[in-house]
Image (cartoon, rainbow, N blue to C red):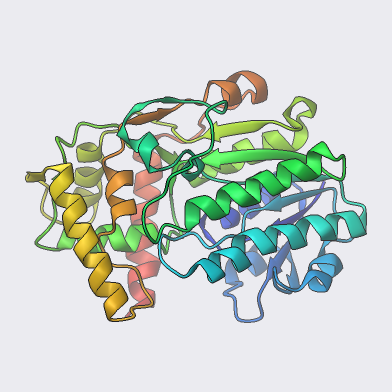
Length: 337
């Protein structure tokens, strides 16, 4: 199989490319000229220099592909709507139109459980039949952008222009996480280190390699066409267990304090306001979206993926976290010195 992968220099995309190569598939990765492509070159992936906002460059790399894995997105809770529109919605449209131009039929689109909205994190069981969120936090652009892009992908499928499948991951962790992990470590090192609420709530963690396995199954199963799959939880770990396992692995103090959700949200709201007032390009360590993810009480049900795709997690939490910490110590911290 020849796979065309967007976002292959990021967390989820790099693990997907790595798994594809391990299984003997050919990988063509769409990368910007300024991207760090060291891992992809080491894997032997073919590099297609281009950009999601340059459709001709997408078409040049995509020609001859059997399947497209569209993973690239602006994965953050910070930025202007114009940035999310460009990088998530418009970028997805350009990928879909490139597929039509190149005659490539199959696409696995990586969405997010964020499409259920922040209300979902308050509790309940959420499966793929749940409606899209209709209310959002102020300055929350990631979720509405992912909803719009997911709808776009499914509309192309309904028109028989492509054959699509949607994957909705939860909180992805693993080596090469340069987005959420550094913020979390900074939080654990600070005076505010604490659990939000009791800390006994389940966190919707998914290890990047287990997510890659699900994407490959979705690309190969005929019954996956037109379907949406939660791939959001591969272990039963509470917020307190996750924070303390990460702290222990990094030699930090264990988290012993807790603060109420309402207090955490008020602190996050002030942090966001200050960051915007100062026109910070990077998100604050504590944001309301981050608070909701940490204090999540929802169960994002993965039954459909297990039954229809035959998916099951290959790598357990202890192994996955150990590899994540090893990468963070050996590569991320060294790269910042």
